Length: 344
Image (spheres, rainbow, N blue to C red):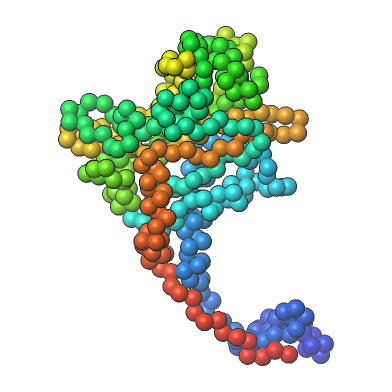
């Protein structure tokens, strides 16, 4: 039923097969659509595929008790909305079926703020630069490991380096060493180390795992691991008391070139079979955070990734992959828009 005053020249709603509305002060009438559809044009599906990837990553983080931190949130903006605003275009396009989706990979920004972050190293030996590095596979190889004897498990780790000639054994000694190496840190600050890892198995050779491999159960679901502690030079608590996620290990040591490492490691749940290829892909971040009278301050923290992870991200940004995803969404070229047939 149409509402309004036809005598005054305006109406809203439908009468029979005609729908009335006002556009910029003008009365407009157009054919009524009695079977509204959900448009699925290629541009719309492209945006949906990015949105789906970002939502999946955020949801996975929350489910694993990870707290995303965005210091520069807009007024009344939720963490979720801040994440989507900053990240929706940083992911890859995924489809609706397992064959066309990776488990939410992308160049994600997990924290955004004003504290100076630690740098990302391209070297496995990161301590000399005071950087952090994400490693995957046995011995940090850039290709899957071939276990011919059935020994060991594929693992991923993230290493935060600092200058030291002796490995600290207490939280206080660790805090002193970190503050000397990272002058932006203060007593009371939090250090959070995040590692997201995923093992795969099969005859992949030197290739990164395919979406089909994930669908076939040849890749485990992503494992979120993190460690967190407070900078406190007066603490006598042993390093072993630092919190880290179940299923992960945390160690401090590895003295080399006057440097030392904090290492968060996650081993795969896959059990190697003699002759099979096993490996893992990984990404991670180190976040410095601080509670102040004006609110939470954090460091900027885009995910840093291992070799295979970045290969997968790059592949999912190719035209061939995007075309495959669009088919999975059932997207079609947009139809020619129909114009108004009456305008008063």
